[in-house]
Amino acid sequence: MALDRRIVELYDEYTHKPLDRRSFMNRLVAIAGSAAAAEAALSLLEPNYAQAQQVTADDARIEGKRIDETIGGVKLKGYLVTPKTQARRGGVLVIHENRGLNPHIEDVTRRAALAGFSALGVDFLTPLGGTPADADAARALFPQLKPEDVIAQGRAALAFLKARPDATGKVGAVGFCWGGGAVNDLAVSAPELNAGVVFYGRSPDLAKVPQIKARLLIQHAARDTRLVEGLPAYEAALKAAGVNYQAIVYPDVDHAFLNDTSAERYNAAAAKLAWERTVAFLAAETGAA
Image 1 (cartoon, rainbow, N blue to C red):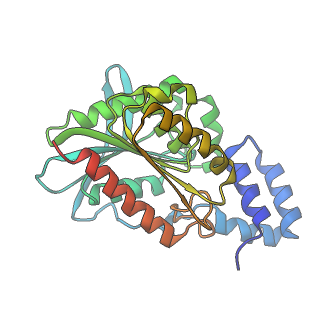
Image 2: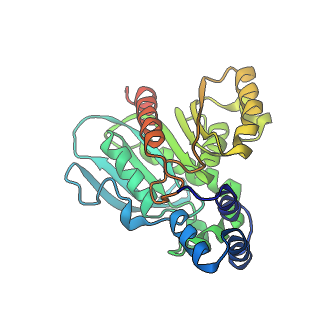
């Protein structure tokens, strides 16, 4: 049985706004009816990394390693995964949600490598000491991130990927939730970005949309009303600026529908289709030398 919509909406509020854990749990218990019911509901919403891994770290088709580099004076830490092939390939920056570079995003990075890209999952919390293991602690750090540091890390990551000897010289980015918004911000700030895929991320400053050079694929969830309601204004700005883009709203799915660590919000059919579209789009825009 699906959870009460109020519970899902409350959880989304908790994960995207400065709502402390105690206040969240008090409101959750009030909706669920008891502490036990609240805990049961939470188990369906909170990430369970152990039960959701599509590509293992030791998969023989890929090679992964941690990077700790300084690119153009910018400290860059992350998880680089590449296919074990000799072909030249596009680079893809994978940008995490507001939980930081966690096992789920590392799994997504491996999926991107398996699809044929040099994939780099960057820890954007590096200026604040890196991603903590506790998701609540990670979320608490994001308001402290400076927008200019996010852009600097993103551009350093793109430079790193472009400079690889196996690179086509073309780079893309895919981001989720907070990371989707970061892709939009990177698109207006980094003319070297060839393609951006936005999964349920906020729009950029609309006044800066004419600066976008990349092609964009924007993917939202129909039940994510806050973002869906803001999409027409973003589309109008993109059209006025002549930006090549596609926007897709997936029906009957929740925010974070691709995140298979959340049993309640994950939608396998929509996730499969959205990922196939993502891979095809990035391959078309970054694959040719």
